[in-house]
Length: 160
Image 1 (cartoon, rainbow, N blue to C red):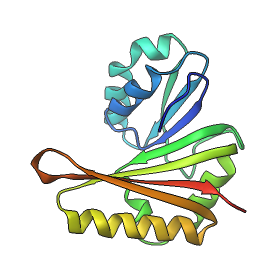
Image 2: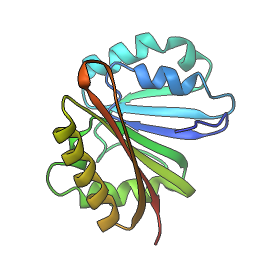
Image 3: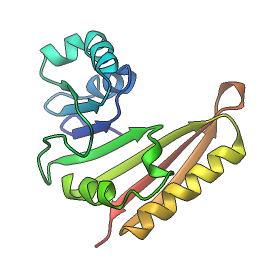
C-alpha cells in the first residue's frame, strides 16, 4: 500500500489489529481509523495499539461498515484483509459507500489470504470483477507465502 506519513487510512474489519500496528507505525501527521463488528476484536486491537492511539495516529471503533459514522471524501486509502463481502454476494451498496469515502485520488486495497492457488485465483477474479463493475480501474498482485498460502491484493482506483 505504500503508506505515506500523512495518509488518512480506513481499515474495514481490523481483527486483532496487526495491520493497524503496521500502518500506524508509518504515519506522522496521518491517521488510521479501524472498524470491526466484534467487541472482542476491538478490545484486542485496542490493547495491541495503545501507543498509536495515545499518539493520535490510530482510532479503533466497534462498528459495522454499513453503519459506521465516517467522513465522506476523507480517506486516501481504504483497505480490508480477508473480508468476504468482496467475493460473496452482491456488495453494490458497500462498494458505493467505499467510493464515497475516498478522497480524490484515493485507492481501495482488498487483500485476501487463501490456502491454495485455486481459492486465491477465484477470490482475486471475483474481487476484480466486482470493483470493475462498480467503476474502478484495477490492478492485481499475488505472492505465495509459508505453507503454500497465497496472498492476493486487488487495488481499485475510481474512474468515474
